[in-house]
Length: 172
Image (cartoon, rainbow, N blue to C red; front, side, top):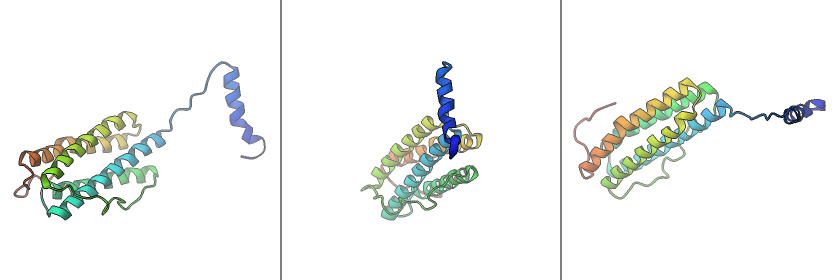
């Protein structure tokens, strides 16, 4: 701003204080939703990289081979929302190749259980802050997938003692 225009925000603020009211700056919905989407994308990227490390270490084993595909679809859904809202992001997963697999498949499945529980909790924290209906729908769908599909798949893996699943499995 130049000239007297730069004084306008200070003048408005001063008038509000003089008149006995305060101006609370409400959070910008785009900032709030953008922050939530960035956190969701980061979580999806970390999950994909973790599951890729497990697949590299133990082969194309279930549930990892199925869930990594889901994590990629989830990241694409988050990116679509970010594109819609004009929010920038790293289009390439920065975690690929930088995360190590746990020492056993059982440990990987246990880590998967923990990661999905944390993911569900993340969405529990984020969803009440979301203002945009499209963002809310996307993140709700991702949370539901973690709760209803991914977590049970990892829990089954733990119950099998870390033995890889057999057969084609359920594709969702």
